Amino acid sequence: MARIDRASRIIGASAQALYRAHLDPAALAAWRAPDGMRGEVHRLDPTQGGGYRMVLVYEGDGQGKTTDKADVFEGTFVELVDDRRIVERVTFESDDPDFAGAMTIATTFTPVAAGTRVDVAISDVPPGITPQDHQAGMDSSLANLAAFVERPA
Image 1 (cartoon, rainbow, N blue to C red):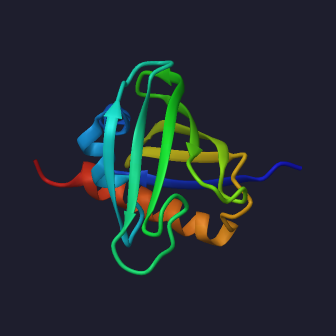
Image 2 (image 1 turned 45 degrees about the vertical axis):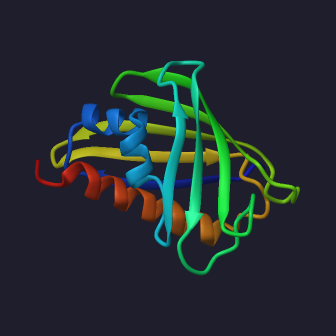
Image 3 (image 1 turned 180 degrees about the horizontal axis):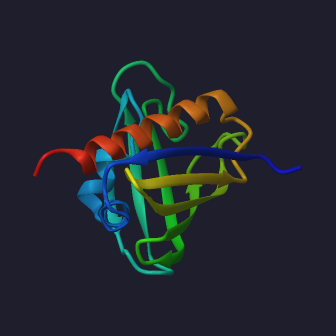
């Protein structure tokens, strides 16, 4: 059976704000990097079939998949349903076959009384990413997303 890693969080923001935070380069750089890393978006075309190039840089301890201190990846927007769903195909650049390859990230936004439930399902995860590390990273990114969109204007 194929591995699918999942994370979910209710965030006190509209589905529209959360959807936009996935398609704006400055927003994506601000929230997607898990704790201990910072994000850099080098290009972003927020259209179906478009994509982005992103670098996650380790700020402290950590071993990068692409370089000693960074994970570099290309993302393609496979499906964009305004304010409801984003499906991305993400390919890490790595010489290590345990980290190379493409994975699919499906993110759904469901309005609830307290805001929006964000559900993330990631399939085809490279085997070098342990389920525990991946869960911690997904949970951290969702916490960052919440902090980003819930901050006072």
